[in-house]
Image (cartoon, rainbow, N blue to C red; front, side, top):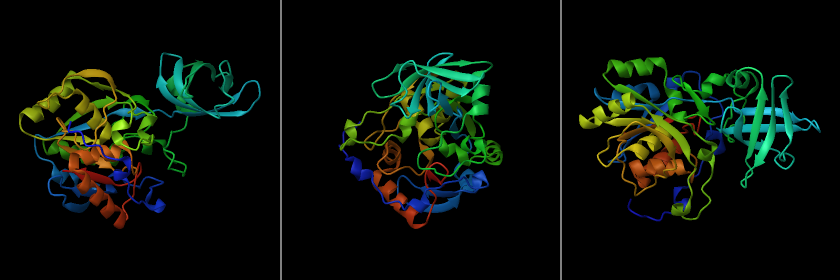
Length: 346
């Protein structure tokens, strides 16, 4: 990687608050689509259902099939009856999870929390230095079914409206539970778009990366090279790896859906742009100066100012092109962030 010591402030842009989408639009594929040519910086204004026009036979679309857990739970402390909010972050084993607890001060080791009498309770068994807590759960039945019943979707902090339909914060192809946030670039796809792509001869490959809350963590370092990335768990099977490699070896494009798929592919890709089936943890930090090995094009949403995600897309399309595209999106009143519009870097 060419070392360019960008400042975090180099990735700042002005965003009026009213452009932060609070609710999903009615039809998934009717969101707007800003198309950026990564070589020239040229911009087109489309709708997401037009995405099919930008694919060729033999291209490979890579999607992240992680499923968001309804990971926000509300309970009461057994001894005082005070309200406690829990956010599940990472599963450690059958009964223990790393969690974020609010308010944290009252949640000491040994504290017991009742979520629903005779159905789900938990005990804080360890407190980490960063304030996260390990909770050991006690429940009757299947934990995932209890979560579906009691849990709420962990919407990002910039969304203040209540989500009426839980499924709108899931991709239509989500199947592996484990995320604390949705891979939101995938929210624009419906069956019709996927079928049109397959009809055109596009291969669709699946991988899994469980999105952690670190994805929303702001970059606090003055220089981006000093930022420490969070780690996230990924898996890619041999069958899916072969689809990606087939496109690469045929001189076709690998088109990634979202920064999560991109981080996984770039973690396991070799210098020839080929991938192998693998699972593990990635803390890859992609910013301008990075040379992409696997990903040729990217479907993504609009990201927060000064975030690691806007840095990742800037590495693919060029910082100047991306900052210009974002300025154009603001001027044209595109909708931003998780429930917002999409960008295609071609």
